[in-house]
Length: 276
Image (cartoon, rainbow, N blue to C red; front, side, top):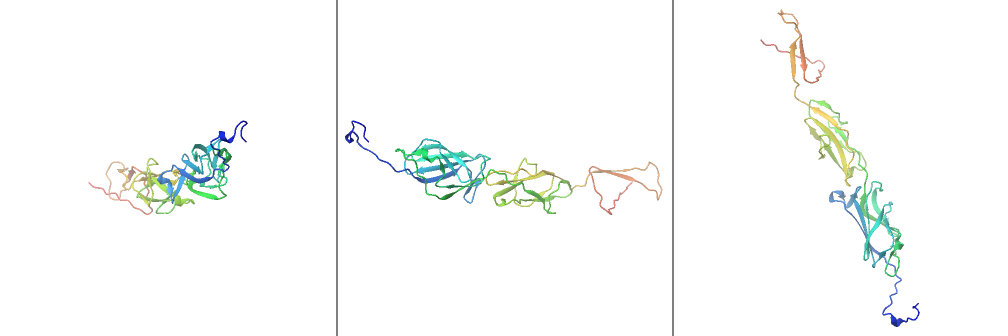
């Protein structure tokens, strides 16, 4: 309806727009590094960002607070809009649900009615379809690896050892194909990537941990102290008989004191050589 006193000659052009803007493209990105990717999947731990860019068929304006919702309940708040594109972004939190990010195209934008074109038409969401991204949220710590004695194939036991010790790491959780195992010989001050049996030839404080693709570390395994000494301990020999002269057949008793604890094997014999 024209205003009173006006006619069409007073207007150079009239635009009639009853077509709602449509989504033409949805891009999902993250800020994870190359070491957090495997088989084209990006693994996000707590603190990483996930961003969704939604492009429409025409310029749009946001007149509210829409959110982008994934199927697992993760919601990204609206952060910015430029021409025909709006951006949703969020930093992953520890409380977020873990798993691959998927969304339904007809319900991925919460409160989409507040996104409008110049004529005031609200956006028209896509037809119902489920889309899967290449982003996996993982905020959980992986399991602690086992430290196994390579000789006995049982859990490694610490203590004093006369010979070198060999151990291996074993990971029994179901996500074993997505973790890297590490070990430390100094109680966790420094770490090495585990690849094969480890040989210890000197004092060590052995511990181990696992790291998943997202960068989450397990708690370290309890420290196992290995005190390896393959040299015979120092000792002192002293005769405990009184000073004097002894004849053939007399018994002389000697005391041997070692610098460390020793064990005497069954049926073993010891000899003392006297000179002079």
